[in-house]
Amino acid sequence: MTEQAAAVELRRVRKAYEQVADQLRDAILRGEIKPGNRLPNEATLSTTMGVSRATIREALRVLAAQNLIRTTKGATGGSFVMLPTADHTSAFLSSNISLLSQAESVSLDEFLEIREYLEVPAARLAALRHTETELAAIERAVPEDTRDLGIEDQFVYNKGFHSAIVEACGNTLLLIAAQPVFSVLQTHLRRSTLGARFLGQVVADHRKIAAAIAAGDGDAAEEEMRRHLHFLRPAYRRAWREAGERRKAASG
Amino acid sequence: MTEQAAAVELRRVRKAYEQVADQLRDAILRGEIKPGNRLPNEATLSTTMGVSRATIREALRVLAAQNLIRTTKGATGGSFVMLPTADHTSAFLSSNISLLSQAESVSLDEFLEIREYLEVPAARLAALRHTETELAAIERAVPEDTRDLGIEDQFVYNKGFHSAIVEACGNTLLLIAAQPVFSVLQTHLRRSTLGARFLGQVVADHRKIAAAIAAGDGDAAEEEMRRHLHFLRPAYRRAWREAGERRKAASG
DNA sequence: CCACAGCTAGATGTCAGACATTTAGCATAG
DNA sequence: CTATGCTAAATGTCTGACATCTAGCTGTGG
Image 1 (cartoon, rainbow over the protein chains, first blue to last red):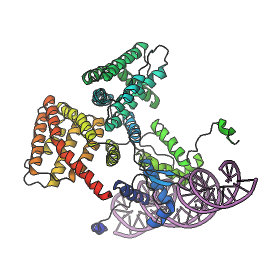
Image 2 (image 1 turned 90 degrees about the vertical axis):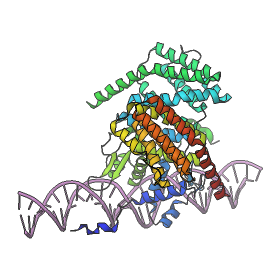
Image 3 (image 1 turned 45 degrees about the horizontal axis):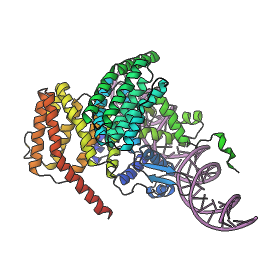
């Protein structure tokens, strides 16, 4: 038997760059290196940790991809600890759930469902807590007249409107969660063809929601947003179905 | 003057490894390389993209950090496209919002607020849609008798209970969003001291919620969960305040 | 015919050293 | 005083070599 050695408590070898990344990440997470501080330069890290500069660099790329550091060139350059922003987090989340949806491990209903759980409260909170600036942004995101707008412009307004609301709700976490959901839904809708009637109704809904928010009427904002989201559902279902067919055609 | 060249439309140089990472990411996101497929090996990528292997490797580390690929050694090894799982996404989100909270750019109220928006609907959905297995998991996560449980055990049950519910709600996106919020709140609570009365009430609440879910009563589950979360608030506020003081003491 | 040890090919992991490039600040000439 | 150019310090990139891991093949003894 060769298995007697099993008692010696052996772990899988962790790759050197993973260990380096882990150590640095822990130091950052524990606050030993604070946001804005510079890490030791690559040569120093290399000698103190006993690995080559190439290994150090691979570890730094990992941390950079996680938005924990940012690296710049030049005499005053180096790797600086950075706080991940809401935008970073949203962007990452967005690409991840986009992949999940592509792989059909998340259904359209799940997207629609959680969107309602996030944006309906967001509309209420926006009505109750919005600042002047935020309200102005919301109203600016509703076009005056839709007739001379191209389809692309409509999408821009659309995105701007929903962004403005979740930003006005005063809850960063809600913002982080809601943006990616909306963004994934939109990329699907974008490939579908939409009628003028539909687009007109969207703008009309937006106008009603904006009015409720401006009036500070949380109940109305909530209700209008809920109706709006329900109104959108058939369009999303159609777009989703079409996307599924495209995918099937491409792979078959 | 040396500024006349401004007309030539120059862009900031993107680092080579970023360009490589972007190209590969796009190919993956567009579905040109499907989950499970293997990327060309590093040497091949190196020659076809016209950069050194070191550069390729740095790009691969970036993609790996974003859970888009996984790299293994050996003859049949290489870099394989991988679907990010809900767990991966949750874990990343968790570390990001943990940092945001440390930096005090997200307040406790925001955490409590969004937790309610996520877990209250989750309780309702769990009541309406749970499977046998999921219900069993929920009930297993409520201890029969709390008297012989250590504080650590209570935390384990606690975490298990909330996990079981969001898993039973049948919405992966809700799961992805709710887990990190809960997890960050718990790490704060864990460093606080909690009385036996408090812990007893927590278990009693959990039992009521579990009963409502078992009965398939969505309204009751929703209401009990809301009451439970409101009951918890003072404890979180105290824990959060203590954490703030600890931080201040450490830095001052 | 089977089990097993060892070999081998193919891939990633790591190292060392060199050179290129960028950037800020300093020194210097006009 | 200003503009120019030099220099130091850091990251960015390349090259080539060697180490290590892993699956599968291969040959051999039972």
